[in-house]
Image 1 (tube, rainbow, N blue to C red):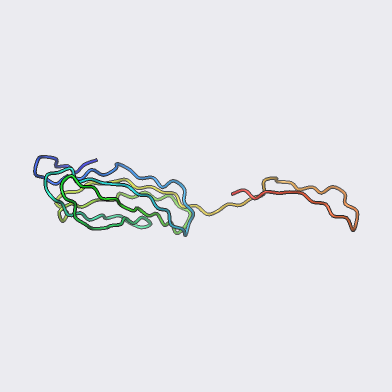
Image 2: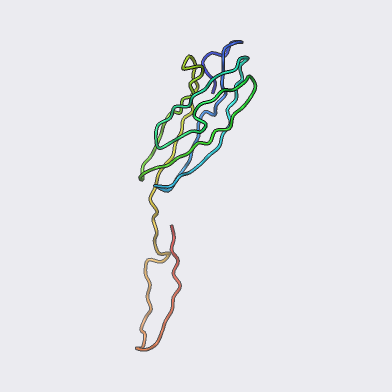
Length: 137
């Protein structure tokens, strides 16, 4: 995805079209890295704008022509919910922009026993019987 103006001399920025975090535990942080490139002929100032529970770092900076920057994208869901946002990279104070769709699903842990029934059968008083059970998330 690039900014709408790609004529020579105008700043352009190549950003990924989407970034998917998949499932992530609520109240924890989940990180992804991606690179974006100044494919224009002029240096460009950038500022990422994205809503919680997503953050991008560095949020602001400057890219010289042909250079790339690595962005740390973080997803920090507060609860179990589906999150979709547009992360907008504002170029040169908002004169131009490029966007990335960001998605993530916050979920609570769900722990259960591997078997729904545990039957020890008849056990004589004073004897010990063991069975192995597994917890599954």
